[in-house]
Length: 535
Ligand code: MN
View 1: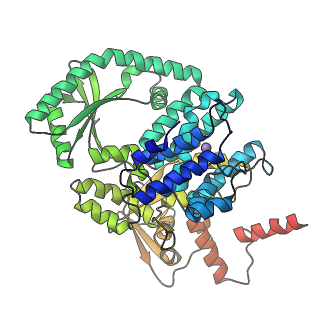
View 2: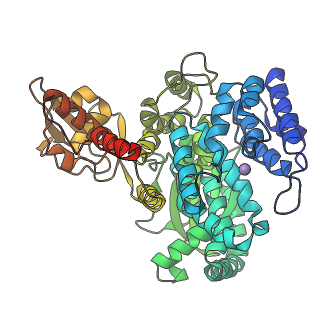
View 3: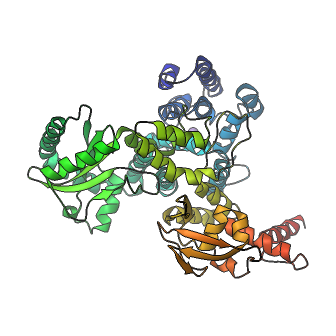
């Protein structure tokens, strides 16, 4: 059992009050779960404590850690919601409510899972910590999945692969994404998992010694260049991700160069590029394989330099170069930027802090990519302990799926949203707007401001006038031409991709013609069902 000391030990920046808050939640939860057992036969409380420890490792705030301790306490009715609120506050209760599974009396089977997920998303849309607790909960459940009855394992593993790992990925939480995938893989496709593990093992054996030599050689060379502090390690590709790549390359292992990659962590961004120079001077790079994710971060904020080189000792090797801060961001993603130290600060402060820091351009660029979506957040009222930042795509997701009827459509829709990519487009001033793929200038205008959408006269993409149904691509610079006399048209409803734009267009259309009834509108449809039910 995880002792409370281990959890507290991770809370490096916490005050004595914060620590005793978590201690209190620890004792409270321990009592609540007394006598309860997990499938493994172990005390149930083990799960609560383990979830809290994971959250403490992510650097989450005391409320979130305590919510991890209490996340299953309400479910079986042993603890009253009122008591949690009284003892730990409404913020914590909100997180626990969002994570709590629904009772079986109202929903059954798949319906229940879909409903729980839907509720999780809706709660997440106002406090992202709900989702982070859920990910930690799922992570520990996946570690202990072998004890769960066989008929349930596959469903849980599949849900992990299809919903939770992609969410973690989108939040930039690379470590938990990879762990969730690799824990789920053997339950979803045991044969493929075994095969992939064998392939990886063989390849590792083949290159191990060679890689160690290159690692030494590079370290020596870089130290000669005056790098006092640097760290190198060899990272093995995750099994699920290797499996996906093998499928894409028709099982031809010789086409995959990143099964083992050499990672170099240096202090500053300048050091990253200097290191790249040293690497390319020592080993010939493969043309077309170099990727600068520092200048062009991945949509989820990931940053590093990737290059693939030919070495005499280990053949073709991928080398990843990054700073310590990039390394942390790559592992913990959004959680690394919500860590307790940063909570309570506004977005402006975050940006300023980043500029001041010695890794300035890095953090700034992460903030630059991530924050635009974070800015469209529903901030909790002043006085709440932390500023809760919600990426816009999450809010949209909760909105877009809040009215889907059946559980299957709901889950399918959710999967589609995660697997269909997002595009990042720029305003003329260089702000990034995050939109679902196939979005149009209309979606863009509404994403910036409803007034801009409602008075959209024309749009320029990369300086050229375009039609409203133009599909925006990654990196497009979009300029909106506004005119007071311009108004939305019904046709727009067929063109737009986002729920946000659709809702505004409908509202504006209804307002401009109050006598006309729109049977297609959401509100009208909702009312009809409502009446039908009453009868
Ligand atoms: Mn749980």
